[in-house]
Length: 326
Image (tube, rainbow, N blue to C red; front, top):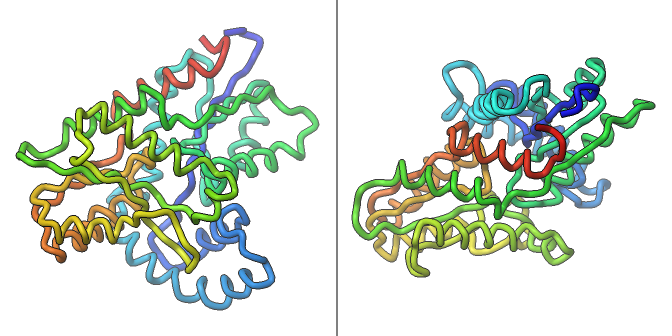
């Protein structure tokens, strides 16, 4: 690496409330749901609904869900594992490269992280959106925040943005290794790969998210040696009334239960760190749906989080997409 350059790597995650309280959740949801990339409804209709109904009712309900999964250290699982990922990458990259975590919503915010790095005299910036599959509501929104944070500065560092890693061998291997180390030793295992949902309209308008999710699922199934009948792929976290990607995770879990699946292994390959959507929606809520429908044993497989095989894979991914860093 050119010693005259001061390089920083910024891992951008979606975000999390600062605490599992209605007040903290309200602040987070206000920022999250005000983003046009997330909810692209007409502002004249959406903003009154957001402030008049959603931000009055949803924070208390969501806070109760966060309380179920909040860590004893006083942070959310997403923040905990994201910080561990940043520390792990810091240890793996060459000495002198600064590694920071930034959250698109909440803290540490993208703007504050960029301000800190610019104050350190950074002249090269490598940005890694931590979303395996590209969606406008995640990757593109993170880049919106990045460009807005850089806009006030007359000098803009040399900028590299890594691509989605939905088909990266290190990512697929990390998923497979996590499954292999945590799945039960039982016959007739059936697998469900649950990805976050997206309005069907976004895909129809050109968002590549669905195709990339299905490619991840296919590659993971092949890596695990699964036959076509051993696994399903679904989409969770529907919001609003318009059509979303199908099949939906909740209805898929219900059908698998009705079908009498005896041993279901469920994982969320679209998330690189455990969060509300994995630990509460799937590990708790999804299990309840499956069992209520007559299903047997339910095993949720944790996200790749801060495992060494994921951090090694992520480090290699960064190095392959950036020249002259090592």
